[in-house]
Amino acid sequence: MPRPLRLGVNIDHVATIRNARGGRFPDPVRAALLAVEAGADGITAHLREDRRHISDADIETLREQVTAPLNLEMAATEEMLRIALRHKPHAACIVPEKREERTTEGGLDAASGHNHLKPFVSALREAGIRVSLFVEPDRKQLDAAVTLGAPVVELHTGAYCEAEGEGRERELARLTDAAAHAEAVGLECHAGHGLSYDTVAPIAEIPTIVELNIGHFLVGEAIFVGLADSIRGMRERMDRARGLA
Image 1: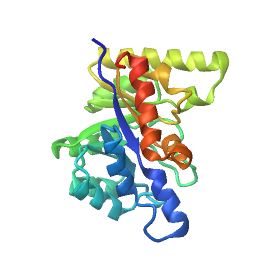
Image 2 (image 1 turned 30 degrees about the vertical axis):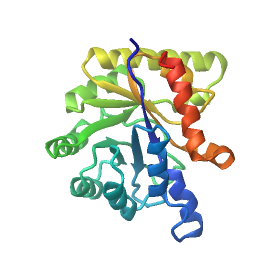
Image 3 (image 1 turned 180 degrees about the vertical axis):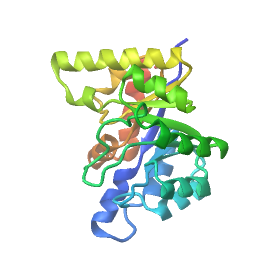
């Protein structure tokens, strides 16, 4: 029997559209509730230092109104740690963050950043929050996650999605190898960044990946088909690729 594959829907860019005009619409919390109805297993939201999309109020309301697991993406800063410990989401994914970037560019360097990251991983785990690290599909980074005590890694799929032809095949091989190594060293393996209808199936076929986190494409596709149908379309492709449909 194939292993189930969870879908986490990232609602950041519903907030991006709201913030372009100010005001309250469209409401990312409403999007989260609709996503769960449409088949999402959890909700992901990245509270950035510059608050360019998700706001502190969004995180508070998500915790109050959405019963599905909340995955808080966060930089390893004291401010974000305080927020995570106050709201206690189901999970916290530590990601790299640069002010000038358009979106998260590349994975966290867990190997070189051990001394900085260790207190954050420990504090989150002590609070009962599941910790994941957003990393490149590199065995060195996965081994570092084990050393840090993080039980979960999320593999960065951006290079795979951006590549074409043989380049994409090489990136897929890297992801497949990393996902297998993650399971071998005792890590739960997730993946995400840039996934679309065109790129999701080969990732969903990797048997040791148990969760995909997808957002930007789903919000963009929702302009044409509606958010619920956008998510259902992704869920169907994931399940078909995994042999669950």
